[in-house]
Image (cartoon, rainbow, N blue to C red):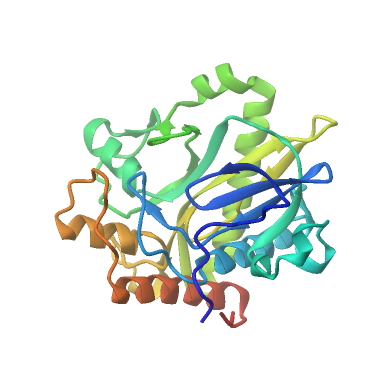
Length: 297
């Protein structure tokens, strides 16, 4: 098992930003994205981190980017550390958890596809019968499969929760043509990924995508792709609508935090060893089922 990498220290690199999980560095006109082993929930970075988590997130994203490169271009330039520009290729701790990518102009909307009703969508549905303003059939129960996948965009928050918005508001933010194209891409990617995952024993209940514009104004898929952080992954053979589902994703950590009695104000309780081990075990199992390969940490 790898040691947890919680902070990337590259004195000769040019740090652009540190997010809840990723550290971003500038490099030769592009960017180096480093997925650390930090883990966050309820807008709080947790302790002690999950060793190897960043490796799984990076390698699974790379798998999906390659699988669907015929659908939309992605941001990847290099995925092997030895091909990165210096000084980054000399920092072996970045191996397998980093990618060298194109610098893009991010589109300030998260593109969410939902095939099942859960999370914030379930909460809104119980209150109004809609999700992001989209009317849904009456009588749905938690975790029900929707008649058709729906597109539910959200604004991207630097801090705090992202806010679900309706399509009209998205049009006001990015323009009608871009909004239509992003909806088409999001639902197309989701349908293909969900069908692929279903055959391998995983239900992708929902997922979020991020896109940016390249220098020629083309839409490019960026950030991460269909990971346990950006998606709800449920084991198909255990699926029972009518309540929450067992999962291969970060919901396991959220459920433990909810049960701990924490008031969701920092600091969060420290994750016990069994939760850390259970989390990485679920991520690795999702990777194995989806790619057909074991990922050694």
